[in-house]
Length: 322
Image (cartoon, rainbow, N blue to C red):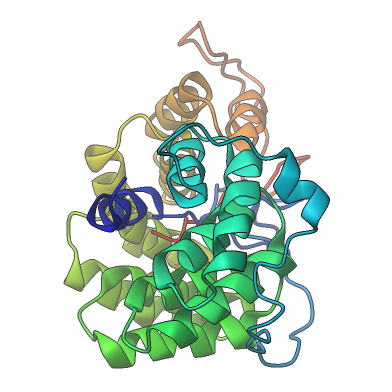
């Protein structure tokens, strides 16, 4: 396929999700943890809150995409196919391991081409090879100093790797190129939240919503950060909007349920938790629903219910990095 098609494909495929594990909050991609409080849902694709590492380094050109000869020999091309075209096809089909193998071969042959390097980074990231993904996305960003998407996705991969200070730097570079990019503000907010700078994170998510009011994850991320800050009434309208925009995302329903519960709207909280369980994607919702005495298939509620602030509850899920 041509490069224009590749650009469209990448732009459509790379809206990732953020998740933050702080103050008893469950994060997408992170290990689940128990809390003695009510459980919200997530921030987006994201990893654990580990220590900040050093700055990302640009891999040496000679090392970028280097693939052992035995691996290249195992790759099969039909007449007229290219490593890039085959890798892009696998990427589109969601086979990121195969995509990475063919794209590595392409980058090994043409290390100065942006799109193969960029798509390789996304494939490695989606396949769980964070260190290699960061190297490839860093290289892609160096190949195109004006690429916002390379820096946004580099920031996402860095956040997933727990390198939050580096993720903040990548987001700020993207914002310097395009101040109106909502996704860059989301990545910035996630990094700030992971760094413990909650008020700044809230402002970053607010700006993301302002830049893209129709962005469901931006609405959820802001609501999630407000839940973390204990500002439950403020969180409600943003989470309601996230659910309105994407009613099939269980994470949004669970976070909204927590905001309802903490503002005294128990019946609405039960309905939101029940919807979250039915939609899937939020284990916290099942625990919250059970704690309040509700069931998935029965709208009746048991007489004995736990205090919202006590009991074996889990935390809310965080926003994704869209």
